[in-house]
Image (cartoon, rainbow, N blue to C red; front, side, top):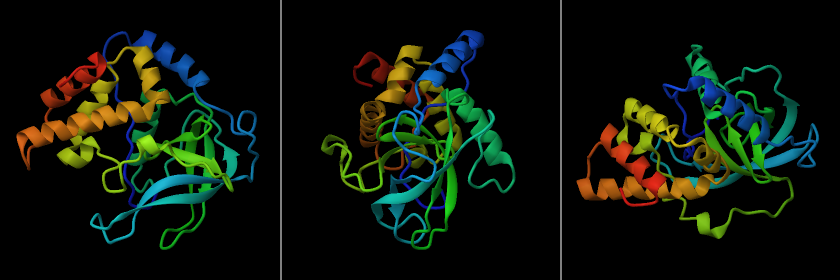
Length: 246
């Protein structure tokens, strides 16, 4: 979305070898692990929902983050296997989104379009999402898992998952500022056994906290200015898989 937000990233990227078996498993999983907002969640076309975003209230990336329940309208179901990107000036963003959507297992999921209301300086915008749980959806353009609720619902995220606005999210891209390292991290995550990939999608916050803590530990040990490399990420993911330390 055309707003500065704290990212919540899902693992993606291709895995070499056994591609056919993985593709079949992903196809079967993506058909199961999503909800129809009309049939399963009591929504209808035109229903108002609110999605929780972290929005920068300053200029550039220097402003403070505010947590905002952004109002939107469920306008339609996405048709076809492809998905659309909110902004696609040169075509590359849309191509990347389609690749990542398939890699993440959402290519064949039921996709829906949310039309966000104008907010402050941000214009009205329509986004494609997949509903995963009663209060969790994935924004396909940003590859972010986001909390949502029906308009008027008093739901708030569990207190255990709140660490303060400034400390809420750490991403590989933010700590490394290296696109290629970010890609390596996503590829490493997809090497987990498929059942753990399923657990990752349904229990995202638990894994995100572990990933975040290990990133911080590396940076604290190596000192300010250290760039996280491929081997660091590999050891970090191995530690998450085994439940041990990096």
